[in-house]
Image (cartoon, rainbow, N blue to C red; front, side, top):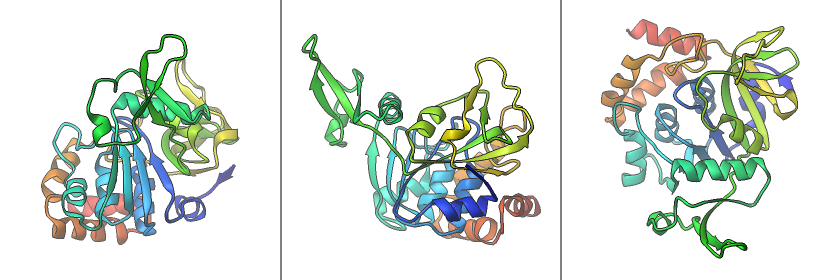
Length: 281
C-alpha cells in the first residue's frame, strides 16, 4: 500500500484501455481523481459507475472513454448529461459503447465481482425488455425451483477509485454517511485508489461506518475537498449552484471545451482547480 500525491498514484496505476470505476453516491464522488485522469489525458477507458454524473460527463466529453457501464446517468436534480448524450447520439468527441443496467443489476454485478463469482443473479430483469439493448443480460434456471432468474456478468474493474473522509497511517479507510456501491466496487477491483479528506492517527469509526482494511487498498492520496462540487459528510456541503450552472454550460461543445481547458487542464492539481473556480466567480 502506497501513500502519494494524486498525480503520482494516477500516473502509476491507471493506464489507457483499462476499466475504471469511480464510485460514490450523492456525496464522496471522486471529482479530484477524475480531473487528474482527465489532466493526464488517459484514453480508451471503459468507465463504470452506478450513477454517472458530472465527472463522467467531463471525462466522456474530453475524449477519455470508449465505453460506459452504468445504471442511471444524469445531472442529479437538474436534468441530462449533455456530453454523455452527445457521445451516444452523435459520436462526439468519439463513439461511446454503453452497457445499461438497473441499479439492482449493477449492485448484483458488483457483489458478484467482490465475491469473485462469474455472474450475479436477480429477479428484476425477468419480463423486461432491457436485454434487447444489453445482450449481457441473460438468464439461468434455478436448480431448485426451475424458475427463470436473470443474470449479469460480474464487474471486476481494473481500478476502482473512491473518495473517503479519512485514512489512518496504516492505510485503513473510513467512509461514513450515505453509501452506495463503494464497498462492493472496492472489493471487486484489481486495484483500489482512494483520495481522502485527511490522514489521521486513529479513524474513530462510528457505528455503521464502513472501514476498508489496508490490505485491499493499493494507494492513498490526501486531497482536501476532493469530492467537490459534491459533498463530504461532516466536511463540506454540496455546491448546488455548480450543478445548475453545468447544465447550461455543458450543452455547447465550445463552452465545454473552454471550461475544461481553463479549469482542469490549466490547473496543476485540485487546489489550483478550486482556485480557478473562485477566480471565475
